[in-house]
Amino acid sequence: MVSISAVQPYDEAAGVRAVWPFVSIIVPTRNRAAYLRDVLGALSNQVYPVGRMEIIVIDNSSTDETEDVVRQAAVTGPFPVRYLRKQDDGPASSRNRGAEMATGEILAFTDSDCVPAPGWVRAAVARFDPGVALVCGPILPVWDGPDPAFFMHQIYEVMHEDGLYATANVFYRREAFLARGGFDERFRTYAWGQPVGGDDTDLAWRVRRAGGMSTFAKDAVVYHQASPISARAYLLQPLAAQIIPQLVARIPELRTTSLYKRYFLHRQSATFCLAVAGIVGARRTRTSLVLTLPWLQATWPAVKRDIWPPRRWGRAGLRFALQAQSSALLSITLIQSSIRNRSVVL
Image 1 (cartoon, rainbow, N blue to C red):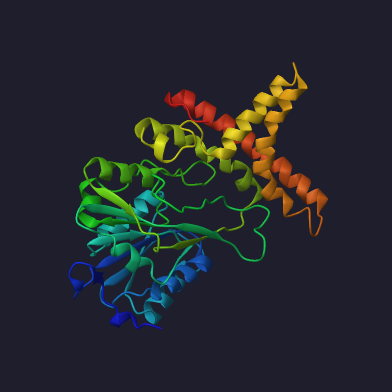
Image 2: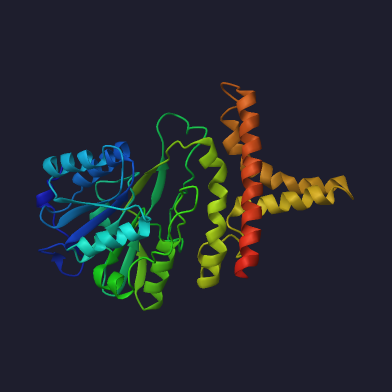
């Protein structure tokens, strides 16, 4: 294994560089002590020079063992760990407070249910060529056991620069971040406790429109732990998509970078709209039911896990019903928000 202190940044033009830039990693959290332990362990294992990195944990008034976990990491890890406890007023505020505390010229953001690969920081920092203001990287979902839990927090896989710049894996030059005023703190949380989201996408595009370039570091990998949630939280997840039409109204470029066929949130939402058209058309001709096949095909991977083995037919039927309910609620949510924001996303 390579010693962290022995690693030197590589510059193709000049050879081995003497010093890596100082990086401040900012992690907002609330009541995720068990996951946070994994995150801080992964950050302590970063292949990056000691003395050139710090970890900042912003605690949104946790009631679990979060503070104890942070204190332990501060004692045992090679990098300094700083801690701030504050009122729970949303993740955007927490990230901004972390940036205010930071001393690094590069600000790195990840979430408290993410596990960065050992070369995460090094790979991202290496992509900060002149003119580059932000760097993002892959986000890969992982879970405990062979199959995900039945009610699972919805996360998505990122394998290329998708225009959303999720804070699970994004780096900013400090001056670019501060020049744009950081994250918009009006993006808070919904009534049921889920973050509104969108603050990450909003900031990234403000930075880009100000002339900052972005790039994708394919080796700067973060693993996002798909955590079990309550049935209520699972059923309410599609409501969070109401922010999407608002973002697209603000940032029309998202139609080409992030949406499917410019007007659909993703392929599955497009196939659901097609399926609804097929069901409505069946009142005239049953052949229109063929339009439901793409949605059934898109839903099949989630259902087939329960069909063989162990042939849990009841569970498979329930999963299919929940997929249909989720798709329907998502479609209704997007239509309502599209009308409200005068920006069509289906």
